[in-house]
Length: 412
Image (cartoon, rainbow, N blue to C red; front, side):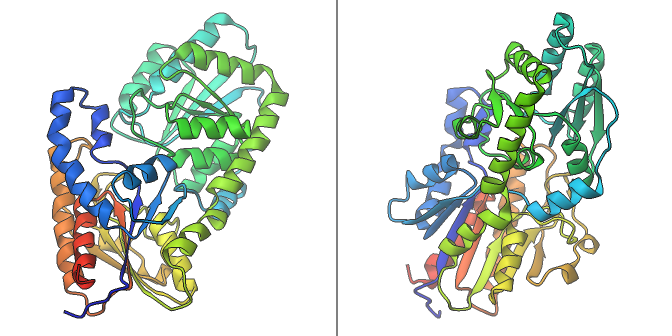
């Protein structure tokens, strides 16, 4: 085997496993059943030469077991600011009403407390303190969509469930709102999630129930939103009233929100930090990204890894992105015809993954395991030796196999 002593292994923490499962499985005894997964992940964490994370919270988890790594940076998932502003302009809604619009974007699953917002709207209506009609726009899909929609009807809430929209359509609708809401259920392991970047770039004040202290501190620091008790409809009702009744406060918080978006979430400004720390040096490198859950691959909107890959190709590096043939967001197989290679300068390689229906399931772990082993086989068959292997976590198996691959080539 040809050893490459300076081969670099980079991990990018998108979610914490097994910690994310604890939200659903509360029993402490049953949680101990996940200890082998924690041990397995620690092995991958300890191998990393560079640690990237979508929040400080996630980076600190890696550093709790990896004491040698000095190249560390937290960069939020972020948003393509150019694509966002294009959508704002292209799908702009010219309003003539005097209603208060509240917007939510994203998945409709067990992690999101839409019921709490509906309860809060019922409280506001009962108090009769806000003269304008309040309309709640819920943009997104998921397994709980019908449940949330039925609850809104039961509570006689003026709510519109749009279903899935294209990214830019969603942006246009969101930017027409007066307030954004981020309702996350108690105990969630989520940190700085994708939707809050869109909220910030939209220039809307945010009503937040998420417990993540990192995000709550951001809202307080920038003055861009109101933090409420998690699951507390009364707090959310108070915040809705406060913002609905004070247009000047909405404007001030909205300007602060946009400032937060530009400084902390716009990839044009933030992703240079990842490039500088993970790919520093003037030499042209051969780079492999391993990420089984990229977003659309038709050139219309880039996820974190294709965005980084295209940035790196633009700087003269040779880049390959390995991804899954399972669409994790929509829980369906990804068809090769939907992947438009001509839209990308980096090479796109699709490997098989069986798929699953529920995010919290043994089948999901199995799906990730199979894909990870397929990644391992593919890496060992490469006709070139990469200088940098950059793995997203999850997948846990792919990240662990990537760590083994790097150790083998470094003679470790």
